[in-house]
Length: 252
Image (cartoon, one colour):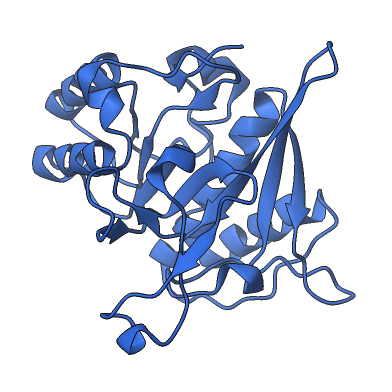
């Protein structure tokens, strides 16, 4: 994989690239972010969308705001889903069958083990119209809708981490996989159509030889993707030449 000039060390350039991506879909970006980690999170969401484009899905932005067609990223898990934009990813087959999923940002997911536990990975690909709500005593005394999606409706998810990786930090991601997609932990991988990206961890920092071994081992065991060095190699998840190295779940 060739090294390209990274946008992640220059927030202005990164903002331009976010806007350039949205412009391809007739949308615009006007939200403010000051930290590199925040820009990194938005850019990685776009990269996940690009993965689906690269794998023959039709992607279209939804719930844009105003005449300017502003794409509103969910900058917090507390954001109301109906106030945020997202992408549809539609897979069409020659026999006329089509399947549509939502690529969401900062959406709560209910644990696959305990219905009272919720976690918020940075990104989730879910069944269309799967967002629902409940009332939780710990959330505004149960007086406000608590939006989430059930684990059974999650096709994949991803996290971003702006740090120099260590074995412990990378292995923590496995705990999230166990909470949301436990079948992967036992080697029971989805086989139904269509193909999705395996759960992914996007890391800005570069890993050493030991971390690369951990990455390879986790990928073989659980079909997860540990993508390190994204400041230096920003296109890993959607690059056509790198698709052979991306672990996928499901079938074509």
